[in-house]
Length: 168
Image 1 (cartoon, helix red, strand yellow):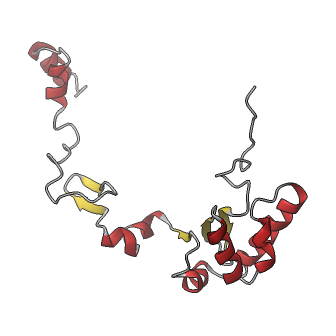
Image 2 (cartoon, one colour; image 1 turned 90 degrees about the horizontal axis):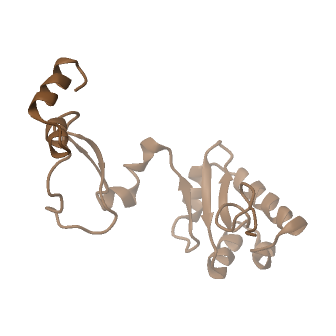
């Protein structure tokens, strides 16, 4: 029988202090994804807790202590203070952004991952694509309904009936 995990008890969902999200002083959050020892070490040193380096994957009571210690660390400063202090650190940690902050994040903006198009906001593929990668724009609401219905076997008479009844 497979082991059952509770919420937050999976390796990549909060079980270990080195891979989870922490609340900051201002109510915002900071994510830590320092699974590799070099990243965890760099983070612990940078936040003034080198004593936690060897406890990266601690569990049980010891793991709870490491979690609480890191919670206290991140709760001691605002997200922007942590962002300033940890910028450039090779430690796999980043602020958790609000949805309206994502488009202006330097990495997202530099890669042009989000754009406004006539059909709405588009999230582009994260891989580099040629500027002409898109075959066509997405259709507007209802723009291609008739074509889709005809493609699945709805005949012209049925289509007109659906239009007359306000279904489409």
